[in-house]
Image (cartoon, rainbow, N blue to C red; front, side):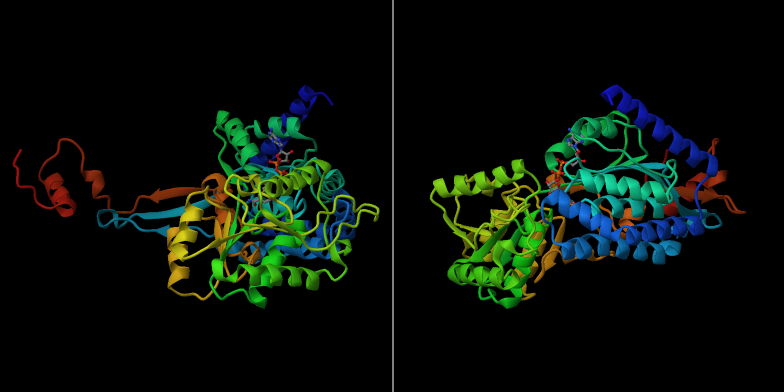
Length: 478
Ligand code: NAD
């Protein structure tokens, strides 16, 4: 299809969805729940096909990871939304000032209409379907644009959703950056983009032409800070889990570690031992995911080489199973110790199984390091919930925080999920997502007594009294 044909087709889909939305009116609780139930049933029915597709797109993606980190997250999010929807949809009574007392004020959460969802490749199922579930819960229709780097998964999602929803309820558009650019220029009622900060800028620029409100779920370098004396099993298990799940291709993976200077060698030894424990067959393990594309594989190797050239200590844990078919893009878990600030891997988001480790002396040094850099999507702290921990939380700003844990904050449906500054704008999941995709319409209903209604020109004593009631008596006479 030519770019013009793509644009026309997408504009036509949007028109059809919006017309259907306006024709049918806002869906009630039962219809929203039935849409969520349809989505849930479709995911379970296509579970194996989705896992096959994701694994084929990656080369090798652990099937357990797809089950746990994608499909289970989607089903859990659907269930949470469905179970709490009645409360989310409820009209909220709001305060009215004393002089308006016989009136009422409330907020009605109204569906926006048609929501656009743009997704990346790293969790291609959950990052498409959790936003979709949120859009449906909020009573919207949705158009989805999954990533071109996972073509089988994107096609499987399109097939699955076409079987569960009419095109004017949910539609999937396939294509690369050109289609993405045209998609982001459509006059949606809301656009949720998950992807890189760099593309996020372009998406927001395109959306601004139509004043489309955006939720941007972007990336960044999320630190893991390990307090002195806390290099233990619990810490290492969580750091390795966070770094090597999906081979580090996780937006909230710990990007780098800040370890107390007294604990550096213990951290290195324990990291390697934990990796070996998680993957007894080394990087050849079926549970170890490969890198999504040659370009990303070369980029990651380039980051390690750049650090090595600049004198950093590079430690590879295991050997590359180059002989195994489909596993050519396996990148061995790698530690890079004390890379300098000018090393590329200390500047750009790594998004792979490479962990730079730097040391610090006191908590203020760690805080200063974090604050000298763009605000991260996640921040992890391993240590006691003591004064240092409180200081770190108060003095740094990140999307979310995990204490003695990596990644699991994302699986908490009742926590907002979103970055801040260059790591994102807005949030979704749970009620925050429901509200991001709803219009909070304030409604004021006049009561029997309308005192403020008496306050019109020509003003007199009554106006003076009303003003005195809220502002106090004025000393200056007119
Ligand atoms: P990406 O920005 O390259 O692509 C995301 C989407 O944008 C894809 O659908 C792609 O087709 C589309 N796109 C590409 N170029 C475009 C353009 N010029 N205009 C409009 N759309 C365009 O991101 P990616 O490589 O797929 O994913 C990795 C990035 O996503 C990382 O930075 C990661 O941190 C981030 N991420 C963030 C979250 C989060 O929830 N905050 C989750 C996962 C990934």
